[in-house]
Amino acid sequence: MARGDVPQDSYHLVGISFFILGLGTLLPWNFFITAIPYFQGRLAGANSTAETLGTNHTGPADAFNFNNWVTLLSQLPLLLFTLLNSFLYQCIPETVRILGSLLVILLLFTLTAALVKVDVSPGPFFSITMASVWFINSFCAVLQGSLFGQLGTMPSTYSTLFLSGQGLAGIFAALAMLMSMASGVDAQTSALGYFITPCVGILMSIVCYLSLPHLEFARYYLAKEPSKAQGQELETKAELLHSDEKDGIPNSPLTLDLDSEKEPELEPEEPQQPGKPSVFVVFRKIWLTALCLVLVFTVTLSVFPAITAMVTSSTSPGKWSQFFNPVCCFLLFNVMDWLGRSLTSYFLWPDEDSRLLPLLVCLRVLFVPLFMLCHVPKRSRLPILFPQDAYFITFMLLFAVSNGYLMSLTMCLAPRSGGWWGRAGGKGSGPACKGGPTLLLASPALAVSKSRWRHPVRSGLNC
Image 1 (cartoon, rainbow, N blue to C red):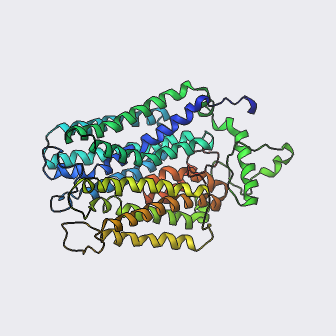
Image 2: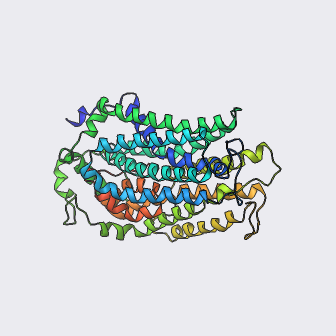
Image 3: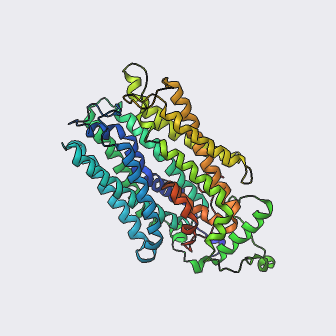
């Protein structure tokens, strides 16, 4: 099909579908961490959710260390199964991986919702919940990696939409928690409605995925084989070579018109074949920005939500103290994180060669003791140096904005440092960084494992 015959995305249905799929991939993680007070209340021995939705259990009742376990058992399977997905794609069809993962996640979330109405003792409830967290995040890793593989054949705008949906998942979960708390119904029904919400989101994701083969625009791109994409790959290489001269990142790999007389100049300088680049060459070029990205996520996941979810309001019990943590921890973090990511649409500072970038990243380590010294009641080893709510809100604002901006910035700068394959690796970094900081060490390997990743993207971060 000639370039002029490329179908159009009628009514932006394909874009909306990938946006909803992005939202669905991170709903499980966000709904679990936002509902930490509910789980802590159940583990404290409550027979109902009457006092769990707005109350933090940070004292002796939190004997299960739920915050720490849910973070560990979420990030570890994401690491393992993202790596495993590099091999699964060779032997398991893409449709089976995506649709099967969505169905298993839906089934496990239905089980979580059903447990709201079942009286289970704390021990078995903890075991069932942790098993659900492990398997849900395992299938989420397979789902994300498989969807990014499909996005490799699409224009870069659709990767942006997918990651935008992922970015809104946290805001969606926080708003769902607030609405369930403010609904006025009994707490058990409120919790049931809260956990049914992601089930609806996953169902919508399944419908969107099943609709893609029926949309001409999606069929045109998703049916492409690597051998049929040579023309598009040639355009991509030409654009990247042109952009390297300007030291910039192209907006879209599909907007360049090639001059046939210049085609011989498009041969890669390295003797390697396009499908088998050297991972070590790429990583040697981007190691500093990759390390910065690792440190950003290490600091963030070390305190959010394990520590920040334990902070309570210092005011007297009331409506504000009940809504304090859902609003000031989860909603505020996700909104400010989104704002920080959006800032890279307007400027990229500092650049990849500046020493300020690793300095700013390292300075975020200060947030760890700052949050630990906030108002966390019923503890004896650490003093409370920042008891007022304003301290925690200020720290959270800076923490979230810096997380979003520095994560977005490093995701934008790494492709600049790594040349063409570094830019292709930017797409692989998307699911990697969602899975935890250690995954970023493997992002170049994940990037080159799929020959379908043929064009650069802006990592969904408006670079």
